[in-house]
Length: 219
Image (cartoon, rainbow, N blue to C red; front, top):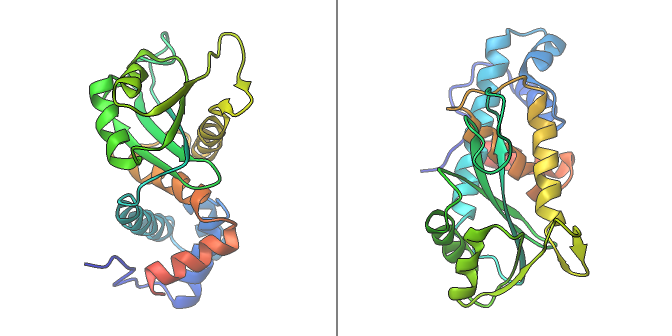
């Protein structure tokens, strides 16, 4: 079943303007004010667009990554103060795989144990892939699994030639910058927002993203 914008009561002109605002990172509320439409109409439209993105990225997820791939996890949201980083309470954990000079793939995980991360890795990366990680102990399983595995020790330096995970870390920074403008995202909606960030990195400039969404949404 294809996913597209159906039963949308907004005019084609308004839908096109909303899509343009979407790829430029304008919030639904701001877009509604600019177009003088109801806030709920813009919010519903943006949600439908995010669902379309998630649908097509799920299909794309079947493509394997080869070559050089960076792996890392990051923590989003959370309201409790205290512990930060791995194991931080009340946060969404996102595992990311970034193919250098290629695309990023994200998946929300329940924890960062090797038993959780390794099935994602072996399903997404070809056996001859060259993998870069930090020193997190869960990545020890990569060596047992036979991957060509390089580790960077962040306590001493962030890059040693090609040995780094700067690409995936830059993606986390970009994603958090994008999501910060929403002043908190409902946990149930978060998967759609992280896929929006993934789409933003994978599909080029806003103009290129717009062309892709026009095709996917069939406006």
